[in-house]
Image (cartoon, chains in turn purple, red):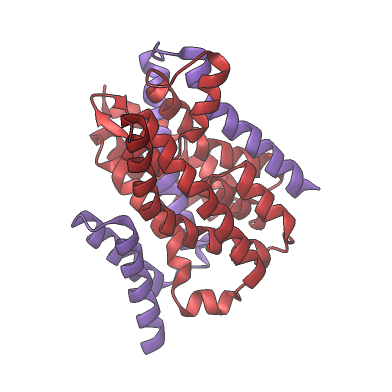
Length: 101
Length: 222
């Protein structure tokens, strides 16, 4: 039951976030400070997500082959390789390392 | 062919490219949900009604990491809080009254939002909607395949597919880091906070703690 409540709540919140700006603010802008904090939530949460996914709970899930794959994605994407190709590169590097070792 | 139709098709073409990545990610999510014993219906319903890979993975990760309902929903909500400023940014380019604008605002997803940016804070409404209309079925069908095929964690790991999820976030993060110096400092601070917090609390709580970096990151500007 917790799962279904979670899905329902997250769906409503997501729909609400997407709808709020267009419906309530229209052409008007948020005050500078709240807008700045909200704008920085994305990099903060994304950095946290990547790190937590690499480390796992209490740093028990660190896998250097996965880190190598992520490094490959970083390098290729910074070199302006398209998203899909960059991620595919990371998959290949990770899979190859695991196959070889 | 009308200009409007051309714009929708332009969005759909961009959406096809993004849709492949979205499909693969959907398969990964569907397969991941099976390792958590979500059953068949729940992950598919989640993909239809939530339609946000980052939020769904955050919710699943928080629940799997021992987080309760509030932690799971909080983590997903914080992840999706970015849709608030993204929605604000496109508001001026949408059409109609409040209800219609709210409905059109549902087309805001990461790839479509980026692809439809015309520069100077203006967005191509038709391109964004066309792009999203391709990605939604790709995401749902990918989830269905992941749920039905339910590749074992061993297969997912052997073929390196477990890198898709963090890799997807990494790419989005790189895009964010390109925007501003505050974003770089904020992300670095958030990574440090998350790295310390995962030692002591469930992953979901660590993510919420990492979000405090958004407030602290503003200090860089001062």
